[in-house]
Image (cartoon, rainbow, N blue to C red; front, side, top):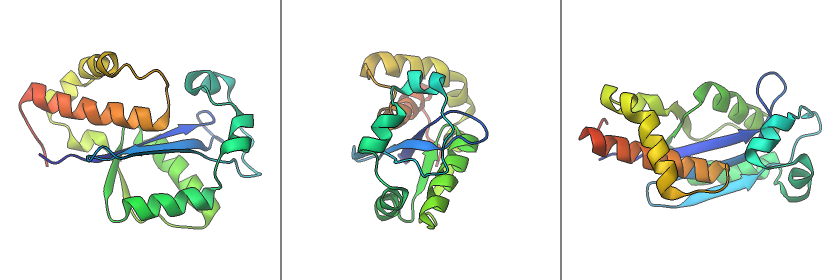
Length: 167
């Protein structure tokens, strides 16, 4: 069974002006990566409701975040040549592009929508399966690598429930 790499991006909010603040992935071998991102000078948008969801304040980003170029080089090194899947492609694509533009780099991997991997059965069971996986994993924080792992586990469990795999 093909097991994909999954990525998740937390952001300063939604819509115009939002930017990535944390990025994380989960690989089929169990390797996980997560890092905070230092906001670029021009990245000023901040949504307090988004902050409440992910629990990351701007001051933490300034104190503990990594520069865009460092994050992009690490992502390119670890994910080179792979398809990496996300559950909010239209948002994640914009935020990933913003991150790589800030670093003046191009991703060496391809971002894809996880829905491309789902059979009709898996699509129909996705929400209930995700809720079951959230209960099973008991991940306390809404953070990028935790969310990526939860998506990975949801896909595996949905496939198992449907008795299917889709390349």
